Image (cartoon, rainbow, N blue to C red; front, side, top):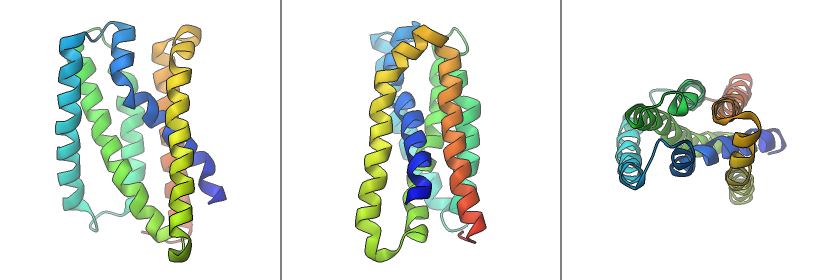
Length: 180
């Protein structure tokens, strides 16, 4: 549990910023009320697609590989959400980044079942989610001050990097302990 405190917090921060993409879009001028509703529909469609594809690859691809590949995807695509001026590219790169989040959101609990002892699973999962949700909440508080201090693009890049660190930590731990 102790090893994963920081990775779970970092995952929460990264996912929290991507989770408030509507606010980011309004802040940057990429979204208005119409395009924000498109983003909401896109989130649901990508989640459904991600769930379906994850169901197809689960068991065939290791969770550690899914976590690392998806974290790399977040690192690449999350900063691209705000990189260009058009609403279309904003939505497209958000959709790709959110697809990676869906995979991470399914792979982490599966990985945890292989990492934590069954007798402590309830406490372990509650603690893990507490830390993850604290990161989600902090992202909401930190994003606008960071946008103002260092800019939107650098903030997106840093928060994408936090997921890469988190996914890499899971990958290294699972590889070192021979956990699929």
